[in-house]
Image (cartoon, rainbow, N blue to C red):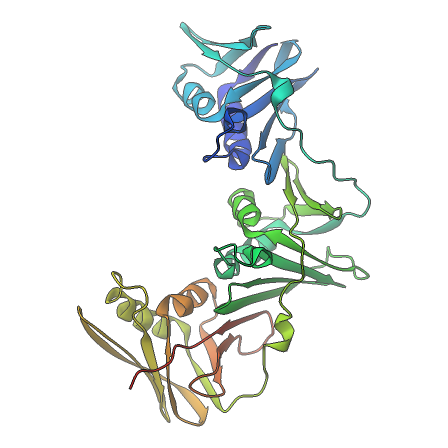
Length: 371
C-alpha cells in the first residue's frame, strides 16, 4: 500500500474513527485503526466490538492499494508531529508502515489487516431520518440517567421509541428516569418501533454529532444492530436484548403539591448545597416547600447552606430530601427559564416538567428524611 494525503484531512478522520477504539483491552488489534486504500482514496475503521466506525472515503492519491492495522495512539501522534501539509504512508508485506513528510521519516510496525474484526452488516431495508443536532441534544439531556452498574444490563442502555412523527429517548438507573421527546418532520409518520441502544455507544455518537446546523442523521437497524449514518462516517452499535422498564406507568399526572419556579435559581441553590458534600456524595439536600417559596438546605461536617427560591406554589406544604446530584444533572441540561416540580408526598418521587409541553420529564426518587 502507498498513499499520499493531506495531513489535516487525515488527522480529522483519525479523530472520528478513534472514538471506536478500545482504551482498555487485552487484544492489541483492538487498539488499532484499520487503514484501507482504495482506487480514489482511503477509509479508516475503528472497532471495539461494541461500537464500530467507518469513515466516508477520504480523498488521497493512491499509488498502491492495500490495507494495514496501525496502533491508533501512535498513528495519531505521528501524524500530528509530522511537518508539512502532505504525508506519504506506505506499508510492506511484513506490515511495516513508513511515514514520510518533507525531510522527516518514521517507521512503525503495524498489524495484519486480516486480523482486524469486521464491522457487522446492517442491511439497508428501512431508513429513518431526523435532525442530527436534535438527536445530539436528546442524548445529552438523558444519558446521565443510564445505569452504570451492569446488574441489570438492559438499563445500561437508552430506550429509543419512534411513534409516527415523534421520537422518545428514555434512560433509567433505578433512582431516576430521564425522558425526552421530539417531533421531527424527517421522521416517518407511519413508523412504530423501539430498540435499546447501549449508553456507551450513544456517548461516542454524541461526540461526533453536530451541535447545530441542518445535517440529517440517518439510521437503520436489524434485530441485533443499529447503524447511524452521516456524510463523513457511519457508526454501528449492537443493541441490548431484554425488556426495558415500563416507564410510562411510573410517571404520574396526579400530585398534591405543584411548584413553578426559576430553573436557574433552584440550580444555583442546589450547587451551593452540593459543595458541602463533595467528599460525601450521599450528603442529602432538603427541600421545604412553603406557601410562596422552596427552602433549600444542606448540613454536613464541613458546614451548612440555606437558600430561598421564590415560586408559585399550589397544594400541600411538605419537606423532602434528595441526592442533590440527581437534581443538578437534570436542571443543567434543561434550557427553560422556568420549570414545574410536582410531588405526591415526602416519600414519593419528584417530577420535573416543562411548563407548557411534554418534551421532557425527569423523575427522581427521594431519600428518607432522618429525624
